[in-house]
Length: 419
Length: 148
Image (cartoon, rainbow over all chains, first blue to last red; front, side, top):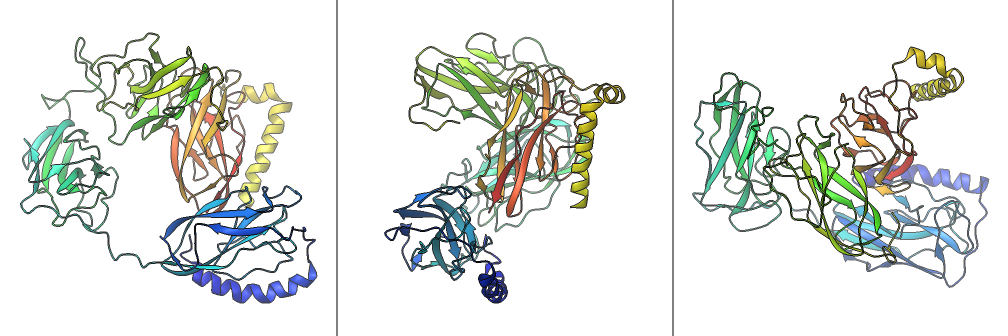
């Protein structure tokens, strides 16, 4: 946020001081009175504190009330945070720039990002016109220090001899345009991303690309596929032609190990479905048990926007669904990376290889709906979301939410913010 | 700035035409999908007036209709468009595709956007299989966020 602040500040001060001096006389504003006992201070932030580069600053005001900007109220006002700057002229609206941050919505805290080094912070209260009160309500000016950033991300150590390789896939192999690629490891364990564990990591499949920089996070794009849930195989779709594949293990923060655990880069030839005898075209669904399932992206996720786990809800509530990294399509529409929602009420997830049953416990949202008005009897109920393809069959891997528990009560949520 | 003003002016003009000479206008343009009564598109996140980081996820809610990818002609569905710092165009024309009009043509219901610091406006507009708004348009109020 304040990367350019020092330069801006110098420039700003040089320009602003003479200008401010001149304009102060011209158009001094009517200032709102403030009680003498009003006090403004930082919460839990002391002078000369060491702080992280990204921190949440909280403000406390006593003797006055926080009112959003634009609303005139007796003994009311809103916060301004002054970073690395002197107090502005007090008979003018507080400037709005990187050094003078306005909280016109009535916020009482803010997350700010600071560059390494020393910075000053000061709070200044102002009225509905952003003009400080008379007398001004201002906090003490504190200095905080952000320690210098470490030179580079620490890399996790890998055991000597740890290796990663493709299972049953040789350099120069011919594969169908939709093929299952299996990953093997030796001397190191596969752990999901986000879980720091000694000598563990998760797979990344590099498609048609060189090795990325080894001292930072592996990029996430179509050429660098992450398997953050600890998957050891993928159904890969590639256009016909020559491609290269390479495996690279990343630690809990997606950074390669030291030394890097990387497979040789292999070349594969992808042939169209007509030529490949083992190809399983996604459109031709085998009938009976074990239908072909539609592939879903690795990072796809379905979740509840409302309610959340443990919420108390009204007997009739609108359940709202969120979907990350996929799209919604009505039932019957075959389109890659799309599906439609199913809301599972008071039931275990069904078998993933079969169409989701349609009954009172398995609500199909086949019209592409992303919310549903649900009426439930009082008491505890479980809700779960499961995405399925055009034939109502869950994807592979299944895109399923956590199973949440809600309590239905006539009064609905108690003392809860209305959404 | 000029082009924006011009677009806005064109929008107003078209809106005026649309209201005054509706039958003629309808005769010249492809039929628009009807929107079911009560259909509504809205922001789960962010809400009006919120301060947001430079990179944030816009989450979209839709009431009374379903989502379908662009190109899918299916009754009572449409796909989302996120309008950033711009006004909606004429309602009988396809929504343009540019940096200010983000198409969620794969049926997405959320999108990660990165915006420079400052105040920005966001608005949601549903489009049918041809990217044309429904009749009447299913559109959210325009909200303002403060990127910091």
